[in-house]
Amino acid sequence: MFKRISVKVTVYVNILLLIVLLIGSWFIIGQQSQSLEDQLLERGKMEAVMGAKITGRLLEEAIDNGVFSVNDAFDTEYEEIPGFDPPKYHTKYDFYLDKALLAVEDEFVKDDSVVFAVAVDKNGYLPTHNTRYQQPITGNVERDKVGNRTKRIFNDPVGLAAAQNLKEGYLQVYNRDTGETMWDISAPIMVKGKHWGGFRIGFSLVKTNAQKAELTQSIALTMIAILLVSILSVIFTVASSLRPLEVLTKAASDLADGKVDNPIKVDSADEVGKLADALERLRISLKAAMDRIRKRRAQ
Image 1: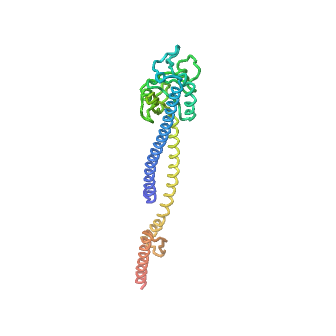
Image 2: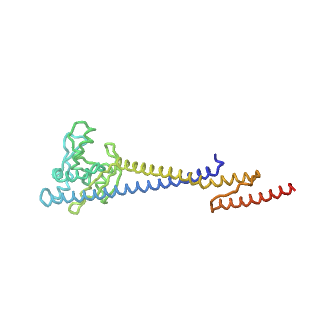
Image 3: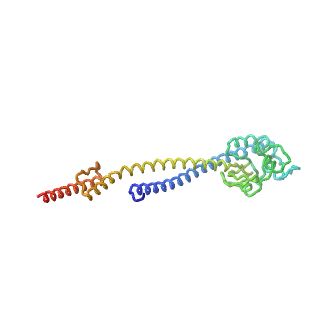
């Protein structure tokens, strides 16, 4: 099979095309995946900054309205609430945030990609969690760890880094104690010019990775379709281009066998056409020579 030029050309061209498409697909998928992550990070940064500013403003309004003092807003004498494992705590301001901040935080988690959106103080204390994480206590430690996470201190390395961070849009990979892995994007909360804590946005990597997988599948299917069309196009083009060579090969074989009566004609102005003209001149010369030889023998 590989003795035919058409087969060799078709195979070599399609292999080269496959390599080009694979490299192109890898580059496009990489670029689009990075773009997807950049968009998610930018969205998370904007939401974290917005949440931080709203939280800071709510605390400052409470101070200005005499709800509690500046010192109370920065209260770190956490009063443990009996009967909880992991432990939960009250502060001098958490009652206020339960009323003022909860609805704000819940607005962020309406986005399917957002797992949580919370304000924490510099020690990682979380006074008010989203409604979805304030489920009734069941007594089952593992279930309550997932369903009721409010008023806990999250002082794990990621939690503390987010709480003490002074950079807007600080990104970390958070391995949550529930077994989930996600992005943690935070921004600092300022109250009366002082760093109070951070506003944390948790973005699900499961959803992000699913979007990447969908993107990869879409691009792969598109490239496969392009490859199939290209293969068929190459096969047709090569076969059409080399068909005159088959005619010329047979004509050359006929000339070798002494068959010089059939004109050699190929409608082409390229190299194949020039070869056909040369073979036709050769046929005419051979025919003339053979005619002269016959005449001499006849005499």
